[in-house]
Length: 193
Image 1 (cartoon, helix red, strand yellow):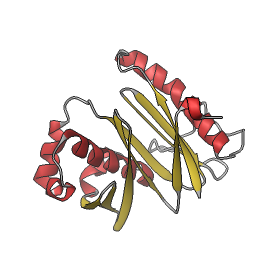
Image 2 (tube, helix red, strand yellow):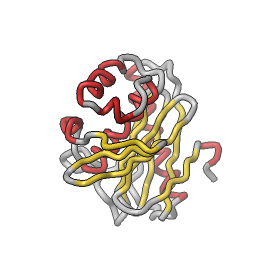
Image 3 (cartoon, rainbow, N blue to C red):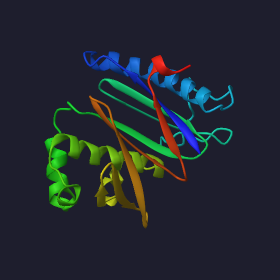
Image 4 (tube, rainbow, N blue to C red):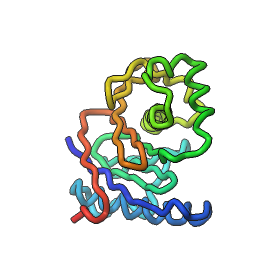
């Protein structure tokens, strides 16, 4: 099974309020493009995807959505299986607290790197997994890193081991995990037909 993640670059110079407004618009654009690439029904609510009380996107007509925004980027996907998608800006300030947290838990040793990109990749992977589970960051400590194999991080959550895959751009790291077999294609708007 295949799905399409659409990446929409945003200016990193936007003020916080401007960034949120631009991100909302870009999420809708990316969801529409992803749904079209996936041959999903045109009637999917890409402008305002409904959410469960937990905040997780609700499946609609058998289609699942996941989206994320961070400084400089929005990413979104519509897929026939549930998935979790997250992104982090590699120039993100204040990442050292996450490194200290992962060092204290012993995960930093398993990660195989203590630099900004490695730490943000683990943070991103945890967020993607928690999105798939439909829970918030309160569960962050309950999804420990088990091991790393290149661009795949294996995290435990809810009594299961999950493979979370990483995707890198020059400015961002993205992580994704699916509830079933799924491969992703990555697109930017200029590449979307």
